[in-house]
Structures are given as structure tokens and as C-alpha cells.
Length: 332
Image (cartoon, rainbow, N blue to C red; front, side):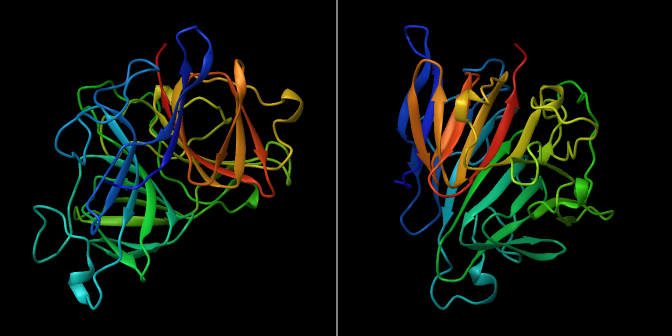
């Protein structure tokens, strides 16, 4: 079952043209009374090419991807049952501790943004409330979830499973706070482990907020970078120095892109990167243009899997485009 999330996939068709090769609902699972999952992309091993991965394999649902792989999903969690109080409000998971219902740990680095509704992240150091537009970088720490209010909460999350046998990251990044130029970015919560090993949190704004076109132009926010292929869950942080489009060290870059109306006109903005990109449209509408076909219109809630094609984003409608991107570097 699950719920419908429109997924557009770009690539090269059988005539060698860069084009949209799939446009339809991503596969979904989930009982009507529990969490529902729509899997946008599943990669079962360290990605080595732009066309690695696809739909999840047949068989029982797996929350975590295999070592070196990743899953990218839109998840909808219902509110607690009517009348539930105290610990009964936490979302239970198989094998959790009955003394701390719902508390669990995954061997993954999770890159998350809340799309709709409200939810509480429970850690060893307490509870942290999230609303639409809030981001979380969950680094393999013990945690649990509780929806707030009477409406479901929907969020997008990409779970990266480290490969401890991989090479050390080319960039040793750390978490910083504040924003360049005095501009405040979105709220970002980064989990980690305290000195006693318990899960803790840093709650603030990412430091890299760029305005390449001036105050009314595009806004680019670096939310997290791994600095290379993922080796441990707590790897990564905030880049320093000149901003570059490609992920540092062929790692993973997690970004927020905000484009004004008028962007992409007169052919400005064509680009291609050696990356698999997962782009969540979280606000506004946009035309995605490829060289070899007519533009495809995307609305809030749609998702694009971009496989290294040359493309152009052109916001349309009445508001700016807001897009959350996960860029996975590929060694070509």
C-alpha cells in the first residue's frame, strides 16, 4: 500500500537522448493504520555509476539499506491513537526497549527534512520538536519519534549505510554554526554522542548560506557534506573555503536550493554534475528542461532522480522554488 509520491527519473533513452525515462508513482508500502513508506531510490551497494540503484528488491520490507548503500524515502507517520498518553504516544519499532518505547538505533547517517505536520525526536538528552522546513542530521544515535497533534507527519529522509572498509574521507569536516554574511539559514538539528556515549544534539543554523545573485536572487544552503564515501555514521560536517557545486571528495552533499521566479530564462543555468541527485520539490513549481525533450512541470511534493543529465530548472507559478537535494558523487 503506502501512498503515492510522483517520481520523475532522468537518464539516457534507447536512442541515446537525455530525457525523462520514468514518470509515475514511486513504490510504496505500509499498513493503513501505521507508517507508510514511498521509496524514491534504493541503492544496494556502494554506488559506482550514475545508473546504479532503482526500486527496492522484492521481499520483506527493510528499513536499513545494505552496507555502502542508501535508501531515499518519503515517510508518513500517523498521529498517536486517540486517548494515548505518556509513553504510549511514541512510535513503536520491533525490538525496542519496553522501558523506553520506540527507542532504537540504526547503522545509518540519516538526512531528513519535515514536509508537513509536526513531530518530536526523542534522544537521551530530551525531546526536540520539528515542524515543516526543519532539518535533521541523525548520526546513528539512539532515538525515537512521536507525532504531535491530530494530523500525520510527512518527512523525506535519505539513509546512508557506511562501509567501514572504504577509504578515509578526503575532507575531515566538523559541525559549525552561524551563517556567512549574517544571513540565517533554516533550522538544522545535528545529533551525536556526548562524552558519556549518550545521544545529544546541536540545534541551530548551518553556516553556509550563499546568495550568488544578490539579495533577491538564488539562495544555496549547505546542510551537510560527508567529505567522501561514508565510512562511519558520524562522518561529515560543514564545508569551508570557496563553494563548489560537486560534493566534496566524491561524497554526499545535502542542500537546500531556493530559486526566484525568472531563473532559467534565456537558457541561463544549464549544468550537469557527476552525481546521482535526489531532488524533493518542497515549495513552488518548476519546469525541468533537458536538452532533448520538452520541459516537464513539477509541483510541490514531486521528486526527481537526476542521473548526471544536463538540465535546467525554471521556476513557474507565483512563488519561489524551494528544493531539497541529496547529491551522491560518482567517480567517472
